[in-house]
Structure formats: C-alpha cells, structure tokens
Image (cartoon, rainbow, N blue to C red; front, side, top):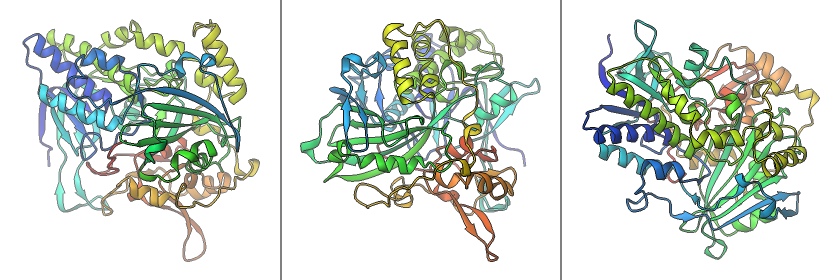
Length: 547
C-alpha cells in the first residue's frame, strides 16, 4: 500500500533547540518578506521536550539573536549564574581551583542554569505561534530520495507492527513528508543523520567523532543548602587520571538542583561503568552534603558529541542539512551545546530562505557552511578545538596543556591536534584491564539502574519489533562476552543489556528494549559496531519532566 504524502517547503526532523530554531527563523524571514513558507516539524517524543536532556548552563547569545524579546515573552531562563566553582576531587578531599586560573570556557557570567526541556517547550510555543506545524509523537524512520538522488524528505514510522514485523490489529502506516529542503536535527548520533553521513560520505575529510555519555538526576534539596545559580564542576575522583570524565551540580530555581556526570566514551577498560561512576561521584563529601535530606525526582542519560571542529562532517548534501548535535556542534570545553544548536539552526534556515526565495529546491545549501565559517560560533569552536585531544592524554597533562592553550595562547595555537581512532576501537580486552569494584546502592544517595529508569517514565510497547538491532546475533557472546566481558551490560545506563544463561547453561544476550532511554551509547561504544539503534514507534521512550 502506498504511503500518504504531504508536501512542505521545509521539513524539520527533531524538536530540540536546533530544529525549533530553524523552524522559527524560517517563519520569521517569511513574515518579514511577506512570503508564505510552509514548515513542518516532527518530534519522536510524546511532546516537545520529552526526550530533551542536558546539564544545562545556557549561553543566551544565540537566543538573543533569534528571539531578542525572550525575557519579556516568558522564556524559562530563571536562574542566572551567581557563582562558579571548579573542584579537583580526591577520594575524600576537594581543592577548589581559583577562578582567576580557570580558562574562559569555565566562566559562566551572564549564563543561566536551565532545564533545556522546558526551554524547548517554550520554543515550541513560539514556533507554533509563527505558524510552524509541529507533530510530536512522529519519529522520522526513513530518508526519502528523489529520482536525482537528492533528499526529498522523510517517512514516519509505522505504528502497531508486531514483534515479527507483521501488521497488528492497531496498525497504522507511516506517512511521507516531502520538503524542498529537509533539516536533520535529531541530536547526538541521530538515526537518520548517521545514515546520511555514510550515504554521502560526509565525514570523508573529518576526524573520527568522539563522544561522551552524560548521566543526570534532578533533586529537590533542603532550602538551606540551595543557592540559585550556583554552578559546580569537578574533575578527578572517581575517574582514574587517564580516563576523561567529570561531574556537575547546577542549582536551578525552586530548591532544585541538576546533578550529573560525563564520561568520555573513549575509555579503555571494559569493566568501567559510567552509571556506577556517577553514583560514586554523589558520595563524595563535597557533593553528598547538598543531597542529604533531599529527594531525587528524575533521572536520564544522553550521549553527546565532543570531537569539535576536527570531527565535523560536511553539513550539506542535495536537499538537506545537518544542524545542532546531529552534526556535532557542541563546545566540549564549555560543556555547552544549546547555543551551538540554536545558532546552526538559524544559519541553515537563512540559507534555506534565500534558496526558496530564488525558487530553488533540493540543491546544496552551501551558504550555510559558508555563514558558519564567518560566524562567532566558528571562532568559539576554533578556540576550543584542542580541548578533547589534550584531555584524552590524561587529567593532569591535559589540564596543563589546555590551560596553556587557552590562557597563554588564547586558543590561537598554530596547531590542531587530531582524533585518530573512533571511541569503539579503544576498548582493551577485559583480561588486560583491572576489574572495578562498585559499592552497592544505598537507596538514599545512590540507586540501582531499574529504579532510575522508573524515574525517567520510559515506556515502549513490548509487542513491536525491537529497535536495538544486532547485525550478527552471535557476536555478543562470541566476541563481546569472550573478549570484553560483555561491556554493554555496563555502558548502558538503563539495564537494557543482560547476559543470561539459557536452559542448557549457555550464555545469551537479553535485550530489554522497553528500558531504553534513547541515549545512543550502545550504537557508539559497542566494540564491534554490531548494535544499531533505530527509532521505535513515535511517542515512546522517556518522558522527561524538567530535564
């Protein structure tokens, strides 16, 4: 049966800050020039913001440009940064780095502690007020190409298929959304963005992308311990000095704090568990003191891109663009990506508007990367380009060299360090690495995975086809278990992967796909690249309230 098709001038895949900024900017330009431009935005979450997870401390520069009146129109940026602290942790102690010695990337004057999910909900309201058609609960499952090989849009996923792929009693076929241009704004390791990078060889001239996994909890704490706008970052314990990682604790409004931990996915020891490292981080005396007497109210996890300029793929191809973290626009040194997403979404929209005004369609929007090269965002990312390569050399050497790079050379070093290997290729055999003994959760400060997933309100219809695909079903036991002690059991922050024994005592991989919080870590870190994450039915996954 042929799918129904809808035609638009622009189709946007993803309701995060990049996609919403692109849709808003297109409509602004159309209104300013008395033109009609039809813009459709689809979002796989049940609502705008449902799948959005970020720290987050937001630099408002790009938002100032996009919506200069954001303060008077109620944008939820309610906790201006009041104090920065950077702590180097040992197991029981902490040393605060004097702010005068911190590179500029760790200074947050003029920034805001936010819930990016709530900011996206507000951006969604602004987009709809401008006439953007927003369809939450619809996942972009397939890239569509025209007869010339250009992208002509996307198809949304079918609903109601059964586990074997057959049509169930509530089956509804997906729709085709055709656009003169299509914006891919799916966030880090986007399902369709990954396919487009491979199809058009967009990363041919780029270094391998590098990633981190960010884990986050939202707590309500004792009002006496709360300081709105306090921003704390940490390095050191519980990570080993040769492994990239660090913690954050951000004070929002209403006695809430966002606490989290980021682990670089280039780690070597397959026994390492980012989730357990996060739980250990919370037990440090300098961190624990904020949590005692408080209550955990939300949990989630998300991968993030960290490769910087060196790892940016080409962002244009016939008929479409990659924007935001789907391309890798994130400043790892600043631990910030939302301003990058908004800026790249707006730049791509401006290039698209120019093309539509000239009656063009489905060509390459080359004005977008050219505008990026001339923008303040390019300058910012260029200054920070050596951060992740230096930090991959260890905490102490990396901190020293990046400090020299930023404080003495002002980010203008005459060299650019390279990323030589993708993260999945860096795992060493389990037999060559020390095991790590993680303490049991106490249920007060530290928690197990399943109670955490419960707080993410994650839900998937169990009868549907599994959205975590194995290219070869024998590899998890024959290779991953045999060589790496099944690291998917530890790098997944949601308990999706388990090694169980069958009735004959033989090991097998159990995939609990209903637990998946859509972080994409398995797609990134699996050492054999045997796991492929694809979109489940639209509207499923986590439902983050205030993340």
